Image (cartoon, rainbow, N blue to C red; front, side, top):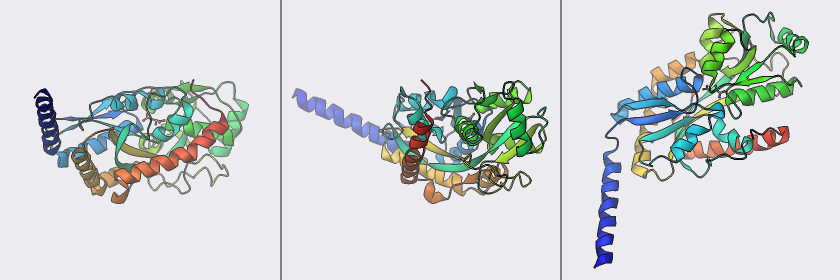
Length: 323
Ligand code: ASP
């Protein structure tokens, strides 16, 4: 008797859960951003959140949970209720942090459901306008003769700006004092204020500053120039190899989020990557929106795995650890 009562209770709870998944979403959805407001990840999040709100019929609210390296937001999403009301946007850091942190409290490969890939963004090497160098070669000489005065801003170990800086410093065989921020939004403010010398950041954050001449720009970390910044040469064109990196963004939900809920999020993301206004907004910021076949759980999972396999040996070889 007792057992059957318990079974009935469990069954009705499961039914209620199933019904809730079918009716999803009935309230706002929180999209957690691992870095500070006003930065590049935040910019991508706001475009995606606004666009996904339409097909979902509910507001997707962007919430910043900034930390150096972006390591707290994934942990928070991992520990959130798997009901589709808390999701995560993150970049390449999901693939690089496992090799960089010995104490990471989330596992990108086992703690999440995947929604899909969003876009890919190159980075740019920029410096504050007081730096006199007019091109990359002059900038490299400037670095050599001012090594003890200059500083590099990044968003903490595991951030895209950390990865790019690591590649750049290794390519020019020079170690430079690094100042970590909780995002390159605040780092950009300090760069504009002249407190730090240079950084490498996504075009989603640097395009308008480069165009308005508020920062010096020395190169793009991609094989080809970015159409929104046609006058800026690539690093490779200028003879610097080994510092290329493309930053990709993906959407995640806590492990155990019901399939009907994930399906609705995937469908909303599909609408977003097909939306011409979204594609144009991203293109204006130097980013390329992924084709719909990449905005799927399987494509994100495969890409994440291949990026982990790509970066782990390189990071281990560089011997960098956050702790
Ligand atoms: N661009 C930052 C990074 O270096 C993150 C951010 O502030 O969005 O990863």
